[in-house]
Image 1 (tube, rainbow, N blue to C red):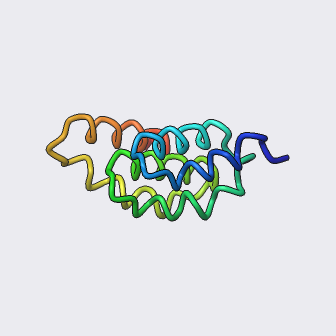
Image 2 (cartoon, rainbow, N blue to C red):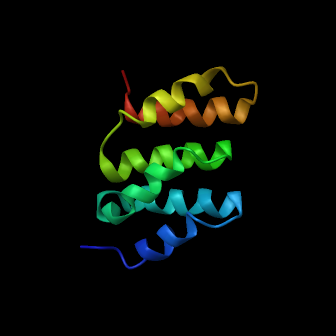
Length: 100
């Protein structure tokens, strides 16, 4: 069953505001598999120019699709980023995706 908020969140993934794209991805991540209609839009978000939106899209893509193959390679290099927020966010997501 499609969550009622999924179409709105999918549309928001295209917002010009980086934070709005992040929040939309966070919302879709929480909905999880019920938001499968967002899979393509989240996959597109893996190439977002904003690093925060890209991390959020990677997390949501994994949560919605169940596929880690695209998210993990995108997140691993960010563990060495100069920004501590980026490193911490990436580590938290990777811990969820592949806890070993």
